Length: 94
Image (cartoon, rainbow, N blue to C red; front, side):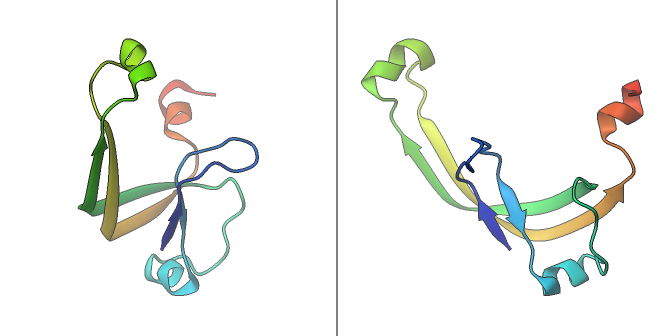
């Protein structure tokens, strides 16, 4: 499993998981889902690396002295379930 944290050409910087065929089969995904299909992911992860950096001088005024924290998480267990609709639509309607 790979995670791509950098922004794409459209500026989307959300982390993405990339699963290979063996990983998909282990999760029970044996036929290709449609693009846009929503999955509920439940995972257990272990922190494998932590980095903290002091705020840059020009950011202290707006962000305070709290350090920037970066984590590397190693996913040790994961389960996926296909969802018919996103949770907000289920709770509040479309």
